[in-house]
Image (cartoon, rainbow, N blue to C red; front, side, top):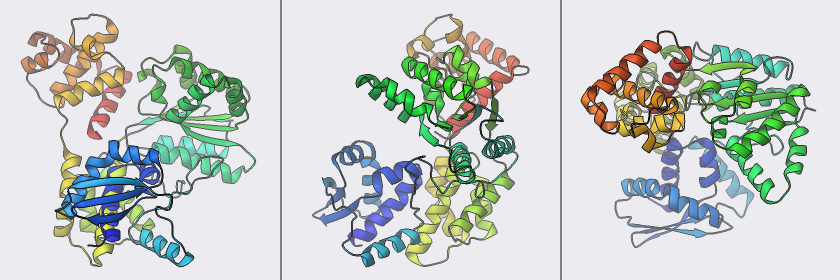
Length: 451
């Protein structure tokens, strides 16, 4: 197998494992420039990419390479400003054709808005699991700043929140070209705040955001615990809100469930429209697969689509990832595939999708969700902010993993089995009439399912 073909196959598998944004950021301008003496050398565009690939993705790359080429032992990374660049238009066209054949997508973003053009309402599949969010998003896109302000959309990983947020932005951008729109992740916003504080340019940042007509903030749950970022966002939020500027927010949990969030911000979030996105049902999963297949110019039998939809139930991103994997195989090998081949190709994919959480993953998910200290959770601390997460963890260990009560007590710092019994019964009882707790448990289950 030559260097180019080998790297394209590696990229095909990597793309199925990570988000489209990360793939475009770290792998788009890479290639194998040397393959000899059991050593692969990969060209990357800069030192930052080199360190990131070495530290973050090296194990995945090596594992895939070893599966494709059994004699690979060493991977080197080298910086090349010419990585992935071609010397002629014909070569660029050839590369573009190859990318298209492999099912890769060019990630075109508007430099001013930071919106990805591929996200729109036309390719967003609506079902019972997201009807409310879609309806609210459509209303906002038609009348920004006048209805559902702020719009707060929450749900688990891979269920379409980012797609919906960017679809709103793209629709507004098209219908109201003069409006200044900004889509940004909370991580990026935090970096801007930190940089502005360090360089004593906080006032410049405030002026920049005050000029925005539509602010779209993704993954707002990461505000938890960032006091300075919360403070600055609060002031920006108020300024925009008072001027009837549209604010759209996404999170993996409801405002009430974001721990370490100031009450004044939580109140602002709850002052608008809150809509959730849950798991898609079977019919919607089939519709999603058909829509994505049409986008990628693929044609698979109903039997194959049924197999994928039946086995991947909780993550739209994984549905598309499965399609991508089949597409890559089909186009690289230039052959149609049957159900038997599909089962073989997706075997590891399906096993990963069905993977059952471990007790430690449950505990870690609860710690992260409620932002509590692990030592406190495992201790005998009786503060309510610790007791509730501990009881939720015990409930999940029993309800999801079917552990015995003595085992649950042991996992949570050596508690007596009667403590675990009490916790399970208390949470079970509260779930009957506490909608907020029910939402938190649902989001935790989604978090575990997508881990």
